[in-house]
Figure 1 (cartoon, rainbow, N blue to C red):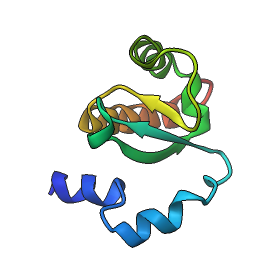
Figure 2: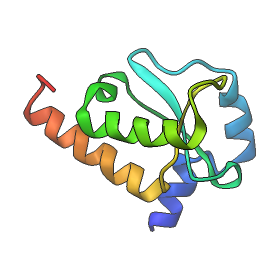
Figure 3: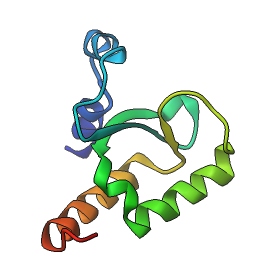
Figure 4: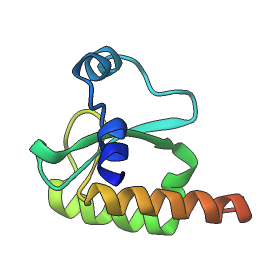
Length: 101
C-alpha cells in the first residue's frame, strides 16, 4: 500500500507528471523535490507555513550541507521519501493542535 501511495505522490503517471511540471503550486504551498539522489527524487507540494517549523528547518540545514546554497528551481530535500512523508504528517498534526508554530 505504501508503495502505491508513494507512486501516486511522485506522479506515477508520465502524462500526469508532465502536465503538472509547468503548473505553479497551489497558493500557500511550496514545491519540493525529495530524495537522496536524482533518480529517486519525488516532486511534492507542502504547505508553506510548515517551512518555519524547527524540525523542517533542521531538515533544510541538512539538505544545504548535501546540495549547497546555490541551485535553481524548487527546494531539494535530501531525505528518504517515506521519512519525509511521515515528518510532514507529524508536522501537520502538531500544527493543527498548535497553530502558533
